[in-house]
Amino acid sequence: MLTQAFADAVVEAEKVIAEAPHIRTEQDLVEGYDYLAGSIRAALQLAWAYERDFPYFVRSTGPYTKMGLDNPDALYFHSYLRDDAEYVVTGERGTTRDLSFQVLNGDYSPVDVPDSLAAFDDREIEIADDGSFELRFGPDRDGGGPNRFVLGEGSAMLVVREVFSDWTRERPGMIRIRRADHAGAAPPPKDRGTLEKRYGVAGKILLSRLRTFLAFPEWFYLKLPVNTMTEPRPTPGGLATQFSSAGHYDLADDQAMIVTVPASDAPYQGIQLGSMWYVSLDYVNHQTSLTADQARIDPDGRMRFVISERDPGVANWLERTGHSRGYVQIRWQRLSRELTAEDGPTVEIVPVDELPGRLPYYERARVTPAEWAERIALRQDAVAARMLG
Image 1 (tube, one colour):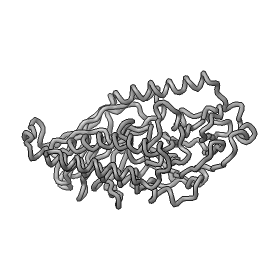
Image 2: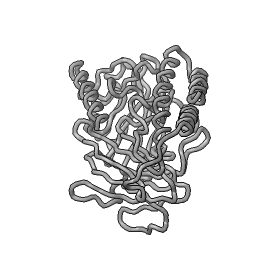
Image 3: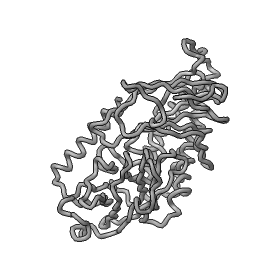
Image 4: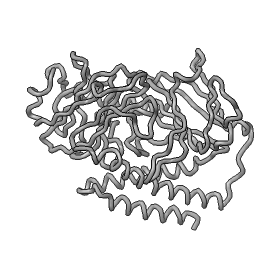
């Protein structure tokens, strides 16, 4: 059977889900099977996108193909590369808060994070007055110069991130890639052997994806004290201009975690919650993430987020959506300086009923049910528009 390798991988993947160490409830398992469905879809998409000679950008993750504590504010794209070929990347800059590029020497695995061979944002490239740009990536023999970047030995993947802060006003740009010496040519037609190989690759991608991102939290989160967050630090395996603060929570239904953090001078600052499957919670129909543009900033220049199951009636509520345990992460991007502990968050655990007396500026933070519904409607519309962009 041509698809046998992939079918076997799906069976093995279900075992990986069912045996995940964090499962405590039936709902945990149901969410795992939903995560598996998105991972199957993504694995097939990525296997068919493995084109280094006739490359194109593919969405690395999205609302229905989540992985790796995906940022609700980001569009992720990637394309595969050969380190001995030249590639031309063209596009138009949108109005998003950040556009960044990263060259990796491989993919994430259950035992390793790929090396970042180059990482930069659009401040390092020349963009025309109409927003258009052309970049060239190639080996050393191509030389340097404006908008030309060397592909180091082992370069295998180009990752592009486009990050939104104001979901309703910012618009995405456009980007495309081609191998320079293959313009106007076409790949050979696929045969049975090609398809059989691709199904096998899809199976390997599926299992590696699941095992990798179940291992990730142990590396970077679960060894931290629960209900705390780290000082800002460079994001492991991430961009040179990105810092993050990470933690994991474990809260009863009558408890709230207050996360207080200064509103930064960084162009992008966002906070999000994630499930124990190491993926974002539903950010379309629930407020499980906020950017500095979306959040309410207190008169003292700080943002105070309330993570709880029960509705506290405040604008900066981050909904747990039934997840008593999970991950919380703050990201700062497009930085022009190193962050310090003073830029980072403080955490306090309080009873939800005591929030009126424990949350500074509580009366100013309150929202009505109608205002809350409007906030959710704006999220739904904004995500729908972004995903079509």
